[in-house]
Amino acid sequence: MSTQRFNLKNKTALITGAAGLLGVEHAAALLECGTTVIITDVSELALKAAARKLKSVFSDSDLHHYTMDVSDIESINSVFHELKSQQISIDILVNNAAIDPKVKVDGMLETSRLENFSREQWDLQIAVGLTGAFLCSKVFGSAMANNTKGGVILNIASDLSVFAPDQRLYRKEGLPEELQPVKPVTYSVIKAGLIGLTRYLATYWAEQGVRCNALSPGGVFNGQDDEFVQRLAALIPLGRMARKDEYRAAIQFLCSDASSYMTGQNIVMDAGRSVL
View 1: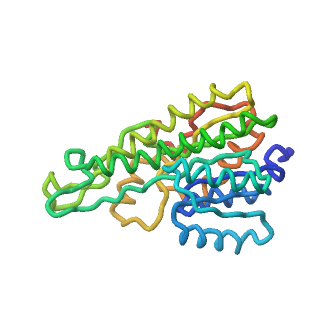
View 2: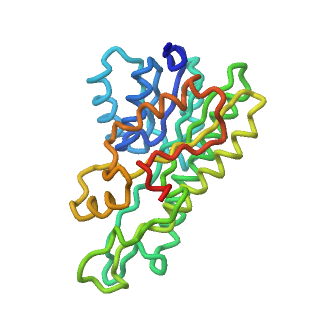
């Protein structure tokens, strides 16, 4: 069986939030297929570290990095025009940027809980995780639609785009109810919103050859405490969390011609948790 349809040697991809745990893996997945990869992140320090890590493995790859704030249209436009000045056009946009909400206690309030969750955090997290995907799609997707090649937009969502968080996973023994940590409301809203954006974009630029899909990963093991891992694994038919590199093949499929007849879909890879 030929794997030619996975060949991305003549394509250029831009990944947002690329210095994060999965952002680096998404970049590696595309570099494996010969893609020219532009990694972006709001943190210059983390971005340079990610670039060094990728270069150490893909030494002959065509890899570039740019600091970019996805919540700021001027920052996005600046990168767009810089790439344009170098005659670089984007064929693949991976909207991966997000703020990973951390559970924390502020004085006597558990600030992840809905009744204590601040408007400032709501605005910030929505601005990065959802508005950022809209703005990047607006800038880079419009350019794809205006050329003769079309392109691919891939939104990175979550299994929590299709079901609600099980807040029992985050409970801490001995804490009163008002101090029990939870998965914040923003996470579910952003990930569900990305699926709506995916469907909208899939039909909006279909005639121009721009496809848009979403990938919804399940939980990735990253040194979480044993109690949490055991609780989550008990909810997963395959009985474990994902390894960070287990989504690479899905990224390659969704960004290449191997998925040329797929658009507007949400691919849920959660080891079966969502089917229970």
